[in-house]
Image 1: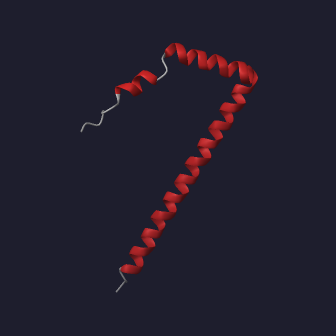
Image 2: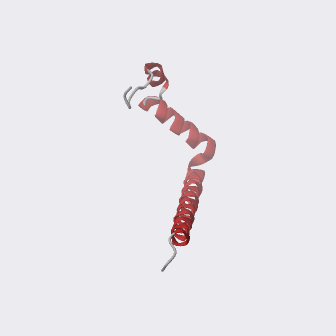
Image 3: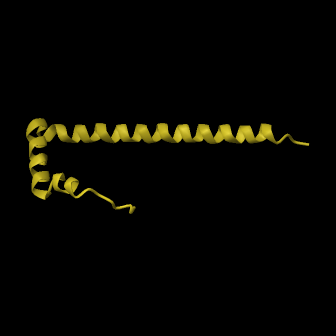
Length: 76
């Protein structure tokens, strides 16, 4: 089994460049040119908060492992 084992039928459903432009135009029509930067800003803030939370959880896990190592190996 290879890493790039992709169903050919799935590739036929992926949007082409022309369809991507149509989707972009529909977004501009629905939200307007003035709302798009606000949407992008909100998306950026959401991604930033997610990364901060991810880093916080990672540091908590690492500190917990360090504390567990200290308890497991008592100092003589």
